[in-house]
Length: 119
Image 1 (cartoon, rainbow, N blue to C red):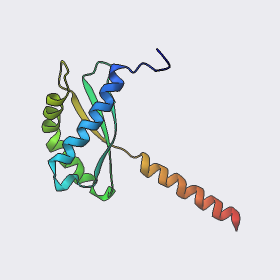
Image 2: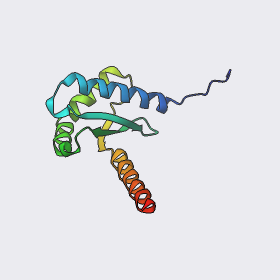
Image 3: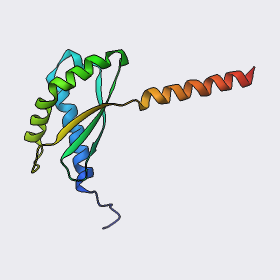
Image 4: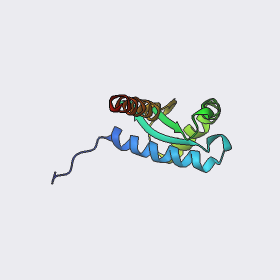
């Protein structure tokens, strides 16, 4: 294989769904999606289901973003089906990605501990 790793079809599809979903959401130019960023995608082994993880620049807009994604799910799914050749159109789930918030909390706790130990 000349030093190259084999990439599975699911991994290639994951990258493609991430790129295309981001492009579709940006092209919609909906004000409810302004602070929304697609942070990751997980595709099921049978290639029929994708979980799309997203973050928000303003976490206070979470309800608005959830409403937008619920309303746009069918459109995004149909656009993906047109852009990606698969036997079945992917079923989509959108999940708010809390990793950034959790990381921020851990860093704040570490800073507090360092500050308390320094006193």
